[in-house]
Image: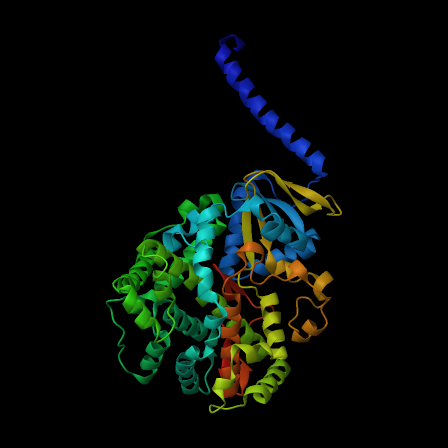
Length: 519
């Protein structure tokens, strides 16, 4: 048998052994140099379990709304640590909740990590935008978009008022009935975001109100308004599953996904084409009547693909993060009447009450001075961060500062190409920073907390920190204040257990909605 082995076959086998041996030797030398130790290994991290069974288990829990609390319990109870090694979807992944590691990934070792396959995961819907690009493409996108989130634009909160009045009428017509205000918040924010971005609202709430009144829809079929919101939701759901599936993302596609992406693209293209037909003089004239994101962007580039991709990237953030935050705020306010009453008194004493309150007094500056409002929103962002999990891929051999060894005090070696996942959802529940009641909703803790650093990062951090952070906070604050002024009674109609189940797509929301009665 051995006589049949040729010299070239021996050479090939020898070359393979030498190649992998050299990699192993290099990694061992790197580990010794930086004092690295291995992190804890998650139970069941065999190649088979990690590639298939663990992925299927997590996807099932994601579908049931229990995935986030399972991950949190796994870290804080089952593992009893903050960093671990798992195999998921055929990949060796380091998972961490350690604030110092989050700081390294997002800031101090920013250039050691990139987005990995995210571009391919998200490209069918979002193309080449700020959330899908790395390196120079990302830098160019950020430089282009940063001016659009100036304080002047953030401060224009009164532009929300017409949409809020439609929402208020819907709530009034629902008196005595349970409403899912999360569903209404997603319609509200797609209306406000589309107006801010495209210069024209999709009017989801107006369509709903028309149906309540028995009036036929008037939405134009030409620009696809009627289909846009539903298609956008459907496509995002697929993107989240593609991202979660890592190497298997190519299998997450079907006709529904492709058609949804096409509908969204047609809608955006309609407005991009309209904007590109305007001359520079016409753009300046149109801009005088109010700020429109697209019109300002057209002054920087006339590439229709760039415009469409950036608009859709911002729409994901501009709609979903605010709607999710508002949903969790009103979920917790309804569950905690004493918090609701305390916040209501702050709102009334600062801005007045009722439909005829002084709206002009609700400004960017005055909202920032409402301390208890800030505490309530901070607590909701802590317990329910918009992006609860995220990941990066190492661009070179590097380390994470903590998590190695039984005591987790040593660095962890990260090889080039390795995925590092971090769970902000779990980081925000560490008792070291937030106390024994870290999993409970208690806004007052924000008067007691010491400096949190990277233990609190609801809007990411480092060079990729969210450009629209102040925009989202201001919008959520304004809407909360106005709804409390108009509706002094908020009753929870939720029948589920606590903590609530959560939907995790590109952002997080309540699995069963926010079931309340308001009047």
